[in-house]
Length: 329
Ligand SMILES: Cc1cc2nc3c(=O)[nH]c(=O)nc-3n(C[C@H](O)[C@H](O)[C@H](O)COP(=O)(O)O)c2cc1C
Image (cartoon, rainbow, N blue to C red; front, side):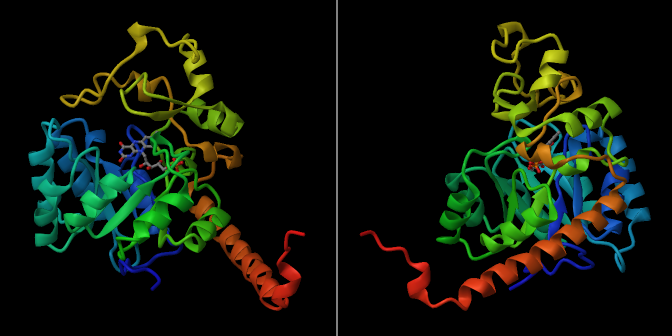
């Protein structure tokens, strides 16, 4: 079944992923208005009052008749001191979907379902996928190898195949998905939607600095280093940004090492403010588009890739099997 979450007004089967210090009201609004569901981390709003202001503004600008749904990314780790108050605001503003991350979504499933919202659980292992599935979430976001931010380590094929053995619900694939052709390939691999972060950092509506956008355009997959040094969790980072911060990426000294500060994620945000994260798909980013233009570009790539894939598959379908099987002598 296509679009199993029945998301209205989609232009492509792809979400714009929530990103710390990058996603704000402008990025989420622009994405939804251009047919891509999008969310922002609640923690990007520095206080609960600011979070309320963002929700008020987003709800006022959002036209549910023409736009794709918006959502909030909630850190469900038990040490998050804002978990309860953020959840209350999410329920008050009836966020159409909530992306849970960093902790089990148990605490939020019933609350969000009670007003008709959807829970999309961000998971990076088979173990966590099973746990989220058992809690009754509406979709699993499989964070795979090469993803920006706190990355997964599993291959997309292995991850999707294994999750499909116990989960019949929607799968949203995340990690290095950068082009319209990548979206087609994830759907062919068994996912229902793609989830794209890094590709949207360079959009003019994001909160990124211009120097970050420029570094994304210049960088290649080889410039991405996966390290636990700055947040305590495996994170894909741009090697040149570590060098610019005066740190040797191959020998990160103990005093630069850090872990997530759940009391105030902004307090130790050096790892996000000065040392920048990106996924391995960075090499396909060659221009900083306004979001509307980027969606038009991705849609064109998607249509072309779809046609090319169908032509390729039809070609093999027409060939008698004995011609395509190469037997060992
Ligand atoms: C700069 C940056 C910040 C991120 N911050 C968050 C976050 O606060 N919460 C979250 O759930 N995921 C976060 N992510 C992960 C994204 O939601 C998504 O899983 C990832 O970007 C997908 O991989 P891609 O960047 O290769 O497209 C972040 C990713 C990036 C690049």
